Every structure is written in structure tokens, then in C-alpha cells.
Length: 251
Ligand code: ADP
Ligand code: MG
Image (cartoon, rainbow, N blue to C red; front, side):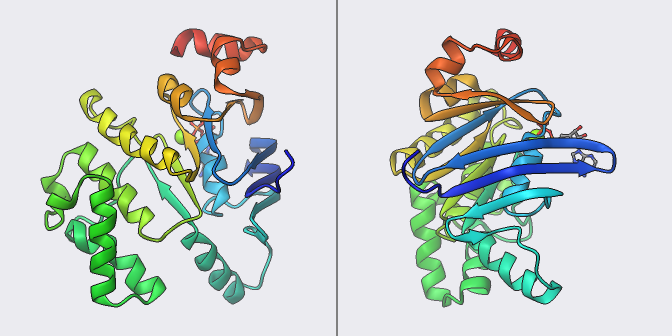
């Protein structure tokens, strides 16, 4: 890679007590690149994703976003300030939508831009409308989460993350809790982001989606990156036996 990585994970190591969950993981993502992470349950995919914004701090190694080391050691106060700043640049969408149930869609989206970026109410309103329009949810702006389907909630969750104008978006099995008929509407939003060259790291169990959207695929197993490459190679011609076994069950 000639261009300097946008997201750079170097020698990531993570243990929970005596359980080593990430073993020397290296991942470089350039600006605008879309990377899929696949692998069996328990292989460390979520832990790796959560390490990127230091939600699950690594026990070894470094995470960089552009010129900033995300997981740098700082005195508590300075760390809080630093990490709050960094997290504004990293949008994250989880399996479960995590919308605030007592707030409308509009209020869900306005909250962080107002609190963290100091936007005025009118500015935040405009932003909420723009982002909801983008995910096709403008009509539901004054609904409560409980009045939405799972797919709609997930699209709102994406809009909420985008409202912070992140540099990178992380998705952790964003569609795996959805009824099958609702998966496509969320995938379409992610495809649209891909077309706009949003930098994305996507943990997914949907191989077809990964193949059609991503530039690179990483196969993880037991805390290591077993194999990585372009989707056509990983899905059509994997060299590693563990990758082949996994894909035999999941393609
Ligand atoms: P994946 O997302 O690939 O299913 P995870 O990253 O969630 O895998 O988990 C990897 C391993 O780490 C699993 O063995 C899991 O049980 C363990 N693990 C994850 N979070 C914790 C935690 N907070 N404490 C202890 N073990 C954990
Ligand atoms: Mg997971």
C-alpha cells in the first residue's frame, strides 16, 4: 500500500484474564476502503471492532486513526477528553439499534451533534433531516423507535452515526438481528455509503453482501487473521483450509 493508512491497527493483542482473544492482529485500511471481517462466532471480530474506538481497550498494540493514536496512554482527565474527540470521528452501528426509546427519531439524531459539537437546535434539525433523507427515513422523523420496524430502526441508527460526520464507520453485524425481509433495506443504505467512498469496516455473516460491497475481506479465527484478500479470491479461491471449511458452511 503506497498511501498512508487511514485506520492502522498494529500488533493488536487482547486478553480477558487468561483468555487471549486477539493475537497480533494487523489491519491497515486506506481512506475510502471497505473491509469486511468474517469468521466464526467467538473469533474476536467484535472485540477487534470495539478496540478501534477503545471501547474494549487492547492489552497490547496500537490503533491509529490518521495521525492520532486512539489508544494512547494518558492521565485520566486527558484521556477522557482525547477519546471523546476521537469517538466523534468513528461511527459505530451495532446489531441492536441502541436508539434512545424515550426520544423521537429526530431527537435521537440531534442529541450528539448538539451536545458534543455545539450545534444550534436549528442546525441540528437540518442535519437530522438531511441524514434521515439519505437513509429514506425522513417521513418517520417524529416517530418513536417503538413505532419502527427493525430495519427502520437500524437505518435511523446509521443516520445518527452519520450525523456526527465520522471519518470511518464500523458495523458489527448490523443486519443479523433483523427479519430476513428487512435486511435488504439496511444493506442498500450501506451500499450507498460505499458508493460515496465512506471508509468502512464491516463485520458481517452475509457473504454475498461482503462480496458485492467490500474491497477486502479478512477471515478471522481464534483471534488471528487467518487469510485476507480481495473478495473474489477469499470467496472463490481461498488458500487456507480453515477459510475453506468456514465458507463451505456459510456460502
Ligand atoms: P465474535 O464477535 O467474533 O463472535 P467476540 O469478539 O465477541 O467474538 O469474542 C471473542 C472471545 O472473547 C469470545 O471467546 C468471547 O467469549 C470473549 N469475550 C468477549 N468479550 C469478553 C469479556 N468482556 N470478558 C470475557 N471474555 C470476553
Ligand atoms: Mg461479534
